[in-house]
Length: 207
Image 1 (cartoon, rainbow, N blue to C red):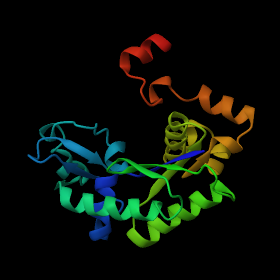
Image 2 (cartoon, one colour; image 1 turned 135 degrees about the horizontal axis):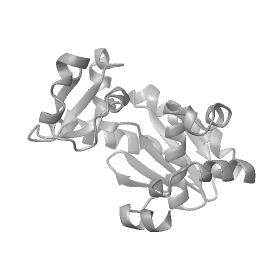
Image 3 (tube, one colour; image 1 turned 120 degrees about the horizontal axis):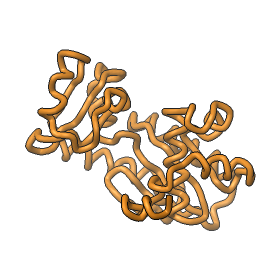
């Protein structure tokens, strides 16, 4: 059984840890030359700002919508990432960093309620580092990543899957616990392009 732990809006969340006044504000982190938006808060996403969108295209939102833009601090993000990875390693001997904000955890042979364990892991990261995370669990890495996507979507946009199922799966989604009906509902409402490894051209063909 695999879990995929992912920090929500990593760079933005790190900045908010050290400047709590940024909470709730539309916030973007810019690339090293301040040319493009490489991280967006949920509030910034709601303004329609796209990943990697050039800064000059959205800078008018500073006055119009109160958008805040910060230059990237990669040293800070790397340090917070190391701390997050160290916490995940407490829960299983096989914790594999996948990117600066993601880690796969192999729970093979780990006893207990894995959903409860992952909720505790999430609470620990939030308490010790101030970073919000989402966790997806499944029997393959691809499905764990998809479960993570669903956990995030249920938390941020519950209307996508419906209030009842979103309440259960927000933040931590364990495919192994779901009924066939629930899985069919989730898969039916998830675009195939959201599956790890499915690009634009393959997604069009599969649709």
